[in-house]
Length: 90
Image 1 (cartoon, rainbow, N blue to C red):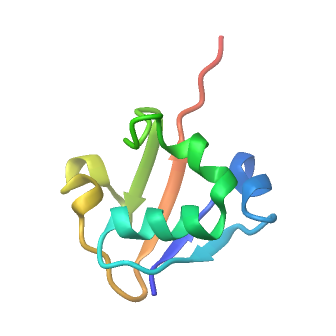
Image 2 (image 1 turned 135 degrees about the vertical axis):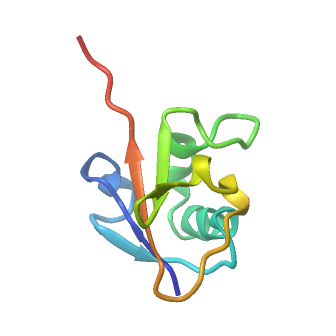
């Protein structure tokens, strides 16, 4: 089972969990499983059209999935996915 690391600002939506085991053969399926387990996190990751929000960065190991195959990037047991939301400020 892949493991998805949750950043501190989003842990309120995962019951305080810093890591969540997810099912799926690709990143999209893993995210679907995450939002099934924790529905309140979905609007923070996806827009109204169901697409991953542009400020959400997801890494498989050290590689941003945007540089791989996006949400169709394959994942396998033991893979570590890291969710990193962009931080803006001034």
